[in-house]
Length: 241
Ligand code: ATP
Image (cartoon, rainbow, N blue to C red; front, side, top):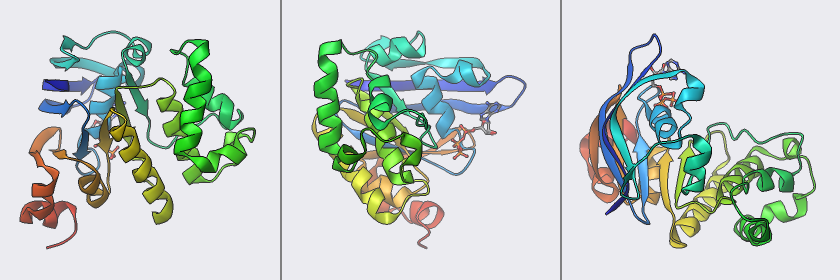
């Protein structure tokens, strides 16, 4: 059974055209799925619909349905975090004036207090670069370290489904490899990951399956290893004719 399935999902922002138009795809249990496509294709909108953030962004009409863990997904964002869905938003959005550790603790609001220590330990084990910076204000960290804080903050809720919006954006190749390694470890521990990326090469290497959106519709879906070799995908998304 899929952990998450989008069934014919449509979203229209207030006063705007359809951002998603009949989108269906699945995220299996314990899988990494890539959601790809050009700017404006609707990737962020899909993540917002799953995390419950649409209403914060003028999300108007929603059609179709989303199922999570065998049930219709409804409720506010905090309810969905409690159900195991955590989102890392584009642009990292750490709280710059809070320390690294305070940022991480903000992500643990659904955990019992007794679980916070082990949550922090897990994040520091995953991102050792953060250990020496735990008392520093997050705004003073490098972009890569801020991304680690953003991912770590999401992990503090112990998610079953981690949603990531462009985690590699603007980062140096070495840092991207660190983040990619962390995503693999998160997945090996049992969580599913839905990864929105402009870097299709990276996303297809990390994921087992992928869905490519174009102007709000699903253009291509399939196993990532097949899509890597698909001439159309290579030309349009991997910059390789
Ligand atoms: P990008 O990579 O540029 O973030 P994306 O694939 O994530 O692109 P979305 O951000 O989901 O695409 O945008 C899909 C469509 O919805 C676009 O036409 C965009 O202009 C529109 N859109 C996004 N957010 C809003 C909003 N808050 N209000 C109105 N329209 C919006």
